[in-house]
Length: 94
Image (cartoon, rainbow, N blue to C red; front, side, top):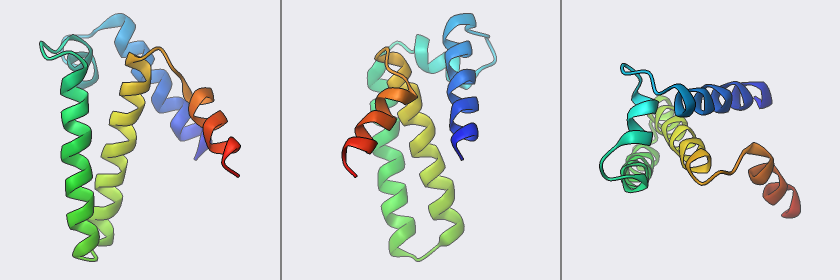
């Protein structure tokens, strides 16, 4: 899983730098709402995850959890943070 997150974060960082026109990720970095667009998506995806969990829908839980992780990584990138910041915090909670 570590490689998956690292690979995804690398793609997010690349999209932030290159801003390809057809990239959803790039559109989040250039959205007129700024970081609020990502914050709204995190809220929306969290609600969808809660509803999927209430319905005991494992497939939907995995899908919505992935959406949350993706948007969280975009937010970290926007804030100039990286996976090491997240990992450090998680390790400190062991």
